[in-house]
Length: 418
Image 1: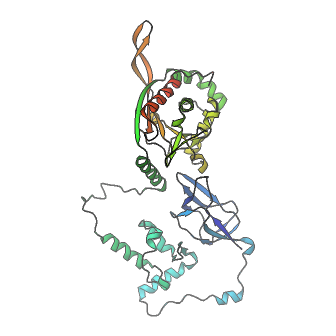
Image 2: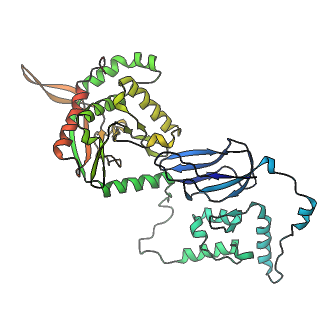
C-alpha cells in the first residue's frame, strides 16, 4: 500500500515549506520516525520523519522547491505491500530499446541514461531526469523550473547530458550587462542560501512597509552592572546558566510596554491592533544568520522566569533546535548589538511589530552627576538605547516617552522586587 507523505503544518502561521534536503532517495528503505527530509520555513529548518516503515517509491518535489502545506510530497510503500515480483511480472518487463539510427556517441549517452533508470528523478510536472543530468544541473545552479524548459532529444523527449551541456554553453554565450570585467581571482561568488534570502526579503519588506523613525537616549547601567556582579555566582549555582544583560532588557521593556500599549501593537489595514499579551522577540546571531525566537507572555513572568526562557530560546536558536512556533507571534523585539562591542545602531523593525529596541555596548564614560550639593564629574557604565518605531501609528512623543521609561526601569532596577 502506498502512503502519502504531505507537507506538514509546522506552525500556526506557516502556509508553505521549502525542501532543503531529501535524506532518502527513490527505492531507499526507511523506518518509521526516521528522518525523510529537511524542510525550511522562514528561518527554521525542521527534520521531517517518515510516518511509516517501507520503501520510498515517489518523490514529487525536488530540493529547493517550495510546497504548500497539505500537498503530497512523497509516497512510501509500506513493508506489508512489498513482495517479490512473480515470474510472469518479470517476463512482462522489457529491456529499453535503443533506436538503430542513433550515432555511436548518442548510443553511449542513451545507455548511460538507461543505466540510471531505476534511480530516475521526477519533477512536479511529471518529467523524468537521470541523476547525471540532475548532478550537472546542480553544479551549474540550474533549478527545476529552469530545467523543465530545456528541450530534450532523448527517448520520450528526455534531457540528455548532451542537451544540458549545450544549454549551458548557449547560456554562457548570452550577452551580459556592460559592467567592468573582474577576474575570478579577485572575487568569490556566494549564492544566497534559503535563510539569507528570507532575511533579505523580510528586511526589504519592513523598510517598504513601515515609516521608520528613530530616537536615542543614554542609560546609566550602574544598577544592572552592580546586580550582575553581586548575583552572578548565586544565580549560576541555582539556575545552571550565566546571568547576562538580556533578561534585564526584557524586564525593563515589558514594564514600559505595560505603560504604553500602543507600542505593543500591529497595523492591519486601517486598524491598529493592540495586543493583550507581550511577546518579546529576541534577536539571536547564529551560524546560519539572524533569527528571532519569541518569549511568549512575558508580562506574566517574573525576572527569573524571563531569564530562564530567554536562555532556553537563545540556546536552542544557536543549536538549531527551534521549532516554527518558537519564531512567530512577537509583539515587540529587542536586539542587543552591544554584545559585539558596538555602541550604537538603528535596527530595522521586525514585522508586523511597530517598534524595536536596540541596545549598545556598556562603556565606562565620564558623565555629569547631579546632586543636591551641585554637579560633579563621575565615571559611569553607560549604554546607548535606540528605538526604531513606525511613525504611522506611533508619534514622536509616545516613542520618546516609551524609551525614557525603558531607561527608567533599567536605572532603577530592584533585584529583590523583580
